[in-house]
Length: 456
Image 1: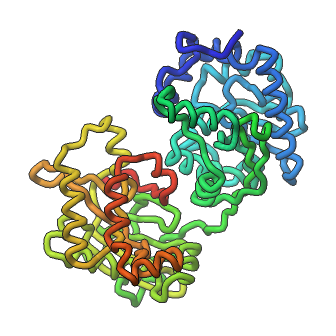
Image 2 (image 1 turned 90 degrees about the vertical axis):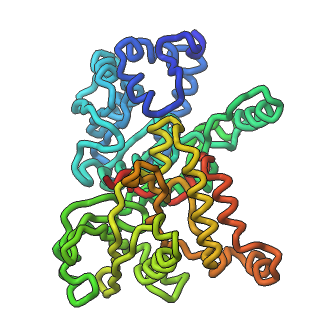
């Protein structure tokens, strides 16, 4: 039996993750799944190598008594995990896949406590409820933005350990893909992560990588990643934040709900001075990191940048109005106009690229007005632009995040600083490059992920 072809029942016909979430729920797909993937001699050897790498990762963990196998699929490793003497819960979005696991004699073990249907983006488990999460043959199905969201959710549920399978670039297969693509024999290269990209994804999700274990160096494009959930950000207490905002410009702010969360801050819906506002509260790590790079506290810095853009005639149409900021020993926060809309990246995907041509004109106008006011490094990318609908019905971009320190203020290296000072590098260069790459979503995974997908 060879690998599944396009005609086989269990072979997805589209690479889109949202499609696959539904595809694998089909009973016929679940029944055919193992037959095409794990039954031949070669694939059994691959399974053995993958399991050995997982065991190496487990050997470096401590105090693991409970494991969540996510997604467990048809139980490829669920039974083996239980044989290690831990209690295992299998979880998958597909009831049909989990049913196949329950009737498989290879998975039958008293250590398998049961199965729970779940979406990895919103797990139905309490914080720190299992010692370890194992996730195999999953992440290569998922786009970089969603991967970060899933990793963060796994980090929430795991007390400490995560063992995750990733597909990488450092293999003969990747080299072959590169050659075929260059020769025009391969239309699109599969998405694979670099070591730097891997570090970025885990860091953005609040996880520390402990070890990366190659399944088969150079001959396989699979890594087993052992990571730790840091849980270094304490649970947010609205009452405490409100108390610490007293006697500041944000005195009287009352938090009424949560809008979204990113690596640097959490955004809340709040009432203040008789109006609804978006209240951005910065995380401790963001405050400390910014302090090493700039003399102004991050809340004051972002408010200042936001105010500069908003004050430019015509640019206020495209910028969320800044209202106030507060810097105290216990909290840093800013309040700004709440914006109803969706991040461009998600809007583009949801509407299958059906975006009015005039939208690109608005993006160019943002840069024209900004550069005319000598404001640079607008941070114009698809995860930092909200799509809003004006009263006329026209779709326009809206900027809401200004915590990026411009490279014109803090060059990334001395060479860039020298080129800027000598006039050999234009201050507009980064903005122009980002506008050209605005629809190159391959770079989204390298950006700051903000869980601000919808503020409506």
